[in-house]
Length: 215
Ligand code: G16
Ligand code: MG
Image (cartoon, rainbow, N blue to C red):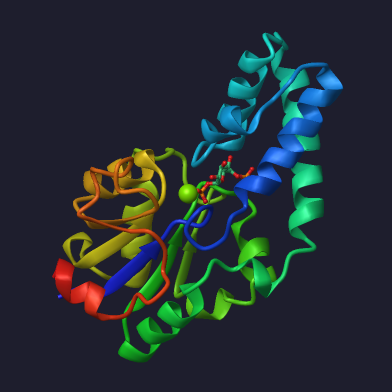
């Protein structure tokens, strides 16, 4: 039986990708090159520093470590500025009712995100209380597809990996779940998320019966 649900943040609970995009685009504008929404797709689930390397590669910009550190910091300041203003309305549809039903059923809930701003985002979305554990970029060393973030989540809520379901929108995240020997539900397009055990387009109408399908 499933005893815990582990959630990715960006693309599963909230569409923070658009705010990451705005901030990276602002950096690209300053550096004098074009950064598109399509380029931004490559940054999903990727850590801040790795994202910066991809952004600089798009613009063919070469920079030393010190300059890169400053760029990543400025991007983050702009990003934090925008997410500090978000509210409950940014929660993706169906997420809150599903979190509520998990709570009522006594299923443990954890976050497994690459973001170092996860705490702030959950706060702004007013859903922090639904999480028994928050494992984010401040607590892990190895990025997805490494299973670390989800294994730590399972450990934090005291549940065996085989009794956990991961909800993910990124291919690397699904791989991370598989590497952790957990069940995985892809959230998004079935053609892109083939490696998941099951794919849902969104959480609209999703209830506890989903857990039985994967048990
Ligand atoms: C998220 C986003 C990534 C972002 C990363 C780090 O991952 O998908 O685009 O680069 O967090 O974010 P921050 O700069 O806030 O530390 P996830 O795992 O929640 O999908
Ligand atoms: Mg994601």
